[in-house]
Length: 534
Image 1: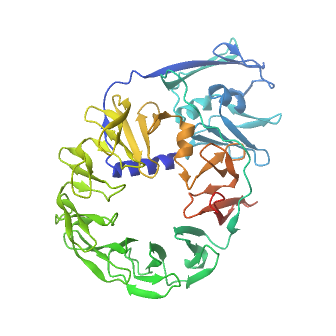
Image 2: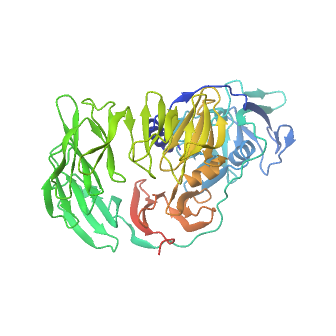
Image 3: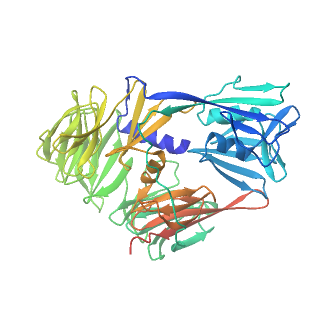
């Protein structure tokens, strides 16, 4: 989950994420008490007996508790996957992943190791962990514990554990989207294979494959599986897709800039004498060159001809016939819009501007953020601390007094979502059209999630944030594998993958990881078809 959060934060910062302040009365801490009686099968949760089928015992001065007992007591939805052969348990508590490796005596929470007290042990077919480690594990999973949270009473032979958690006060529980069904077998364009180390779904029915062991051998193939072009080892460091059946080749001269542009069959079309090339949009590609004081931007056509001169301090790609550009030499401020001929069609007067979407463009002025139409009229006056792009006719907006609302294209309020409490941060990711609010509490913080209709559960958020072409990659916590589910939570493609990407133009890249006896993993990469698209 940390990786996902890092990506989310990066996207949010690019969109102008800001912290806001208010009170946090809607959050409270609840403490639960767990009691384990050594030499018995008695385990209590808040003085309610949870009878076990195996005894709690002492070993080397440590109270040994069965893993399943404690995890499910703290979180009834905890999922535990036990690999009997390797003696490794993978546990999911919400978004947190815990790895318990008996042979290595290793505990890992997310991707950070925990210093282990005592030794993990398998006894009578069950995994036991020394009680002292629970404080370290649960703290990493955002529960409130310290060194005094575990008390050992030697006279009574019992251990008492106090676990605090932060909870949101709600009038009613949020609906949780449940994943049901087994799904169908995947239909492959490319069966999982060791032939490639990497496959990129470039879009428009094109795929780019790499083989690292063969000096970065690069291959272009299409949606029929036909190999269109091969770049001999040592001739291409990287190949990227630009759209319009054009591919950009980066060579081996230890430079980040592109070298030349080819067609789908690998035929060289023109040299790329620029610092960077962006994908084509409406027949023009944004290009950048480095100068003594920064960068200059312009636009080329599909034959490499410079159609709009390198004269802008900053620029974005074309959308709806126009592109935002900065007339400032530094690229800061003075944003307006040009047409595909390079004519200024909207006066350059904004601090920043984004490409048009659904007939409106997001702009920022000194007074705040808002939207303009193609005539340059401020249909949503720049008055918000933050406003998202419009998607399906509505957008998120944050007012100056910390209200998060949904607005329509006339700037009218559709609904109020919440008033941001003190010391919370909000994050918006354009591709998901979802909002996340973080309360900086505990080890990681706690989160609330929103779509345009209101608050949604974490389970619903995780499903919705993965959608592409009607399907979302979901983790089956019983098998530890990924499959694809639809918006109602029905499993459509059975969980058989260790890695699953989003669909694009009817295809998604997947991976299967096969462990070997020597500890080295074999990674097979393939491409599956979207069964919803015929």
